[in-house]
Image (cartoon, rainbow, N blue to C red; front, side, top):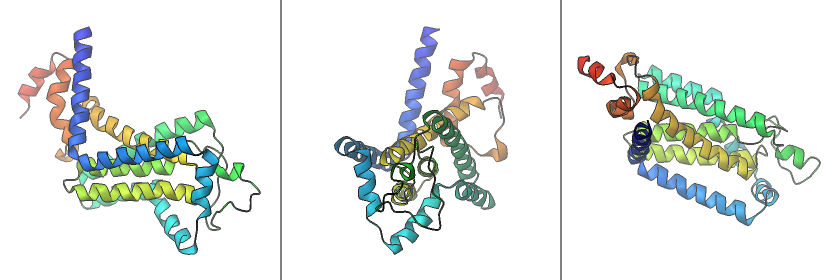
Length: 251
């Protein structure tokens, strides 16, 4: 049992390495993003970091950030998955929708646990607090940022699946701007955005590692596979001994 556990851990480590190799530029850029945000969180207070971003605003930026914040909205993510189906990009459709649901569920659970107040509650009555009149302002469930989580889950999914790594980097920029927009529009603090980005990328990696293992008894729909599906043959012998015979009988 111990040997099988160790072997399983090694397989998962190899899966992480292979996922990283699908888009090193994306993951390196993401690591730099995380390091920069953690540094800011250590150097300045929660209130100071929020006020610095939120206080620098203009009308053109209000419009731009409003548009960009919808990159992390559920309607946009689902519409993107449907659009991928329309163009028969099944890998993208399944990945975008699956990681959105998985990361969203985890995010909702964390929000219900922490019940953190949003900037609107902390800065209530403060004349320097900036919001736009055409968006509703929330007061509760600030941690973590759901829009940031969804945006980074989508970006990581595209980076892992796409053969053109420039697309993955472009999606990273969109996700980062989405996180920035959540602070700019007065909806979240920097720590909410930081953890949201970690949650989005982290749950996406977990999804791409374990989904092939969960669905190994099911035939793939429309004959499409995720990149790591080819690793099932190395994973399943750890889970069940009889899988090797099944693999031999497959056409």
